[in-house]
Length: 421
Ligand code: ATP
Ligand code: MG
Image 1 (tube, rainbow, N blue to C red):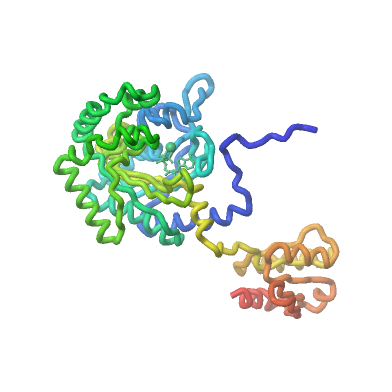
Image 2: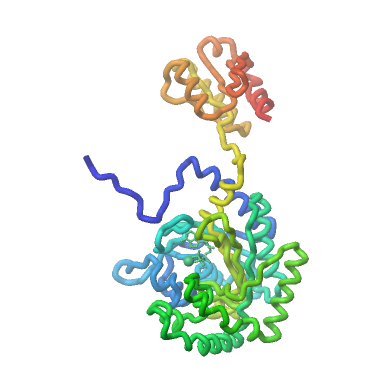
């Protein structure tokens, strides 16, 4: 027997019993983005590796070890996108979308990271994200966070908490990095090689370590907010006030630093304790330097990315009544002689906006009825030679004690529409 080929580790099939939930969630996300005036942007899944190296940062986990990278045709290094902010910025610069204009954009699609697969952490996963380019003040930060809050509301998801922090501007962050370095230097001898590497290469990242021994070291570490300058402080306080107005209560966490180099100022995560170890559902922040770094004009920017697998899991856990995606009508034909009439009837029903499955493959009435039942349809329409001769069809109400009656073909579409409401 031939060996069955399995999917790539950490890359999931989303089967048809799941896709209706995905559609529901995706529609809700699209609607929320639409409601705030954001527009969709679609970028390629492959980009030049350099884009990610220079945007996300050489020393980050993503670029150092998680990207799927290959040499294309012996020439160019390409990578599957691990996230979409870098691509969005590239596209904006490439097409001049930020010349004297502001932009509110969203995207949705698969991302790729070679991580250790586990619940809520996959090698191909999906993100929905929004990005706003061209606004400096905390009003847009608050809007971006409100979009998140509305998504939970729209999907009726409870128990998601906002963690909020500010990294300040470049100079306050440099000052903080130095004092953190001095503090952590004292503990070098007790650290393993990986921690030392992090300490030297990406010091701020040390802060959100989940390892116990490091957390103990960090207990008395200098805090970032003491190093903030007046502007950064005012921006953060302004944002906190706006969130308060919106009834959003963040937990300010000075250890929240985010793993990508491009973040500045405001950073945040929406977290939940309902998904096991993978607690972050949505994460984002400001990246005021990135557009310029990538060759555009200086443009302030802020956005978030939401992990859709985690979101779908959370939604499925919390919603008892998932939206019905069943068939409305199942059309049964009892002889070959009525095939063209029943096909026409099915198309008429579809013109009327109904979801219709037309029986294929012939067979006995009993077997066709069984298929109708399994389809989840509420109505079976039955057409045979006698019905054709009389210009009628039999209607059987499948979810309602099997009531059966005759309806003229001329009024059948309306009859079904009325019944289905
Ligand atoms: P984590 O700390 O969980 O690794 P991250 O900081 O790497 O997250 P981001 O790059 O900010 O995550 O991505 C935003 C969101 O995308 C995360 O909050 C999460 O919901 C989701 N996400 C990230 N990586 C994965 C993955 N490998 N599988 C599934 N979802 C993911
Ligand atoms: Mg990660």
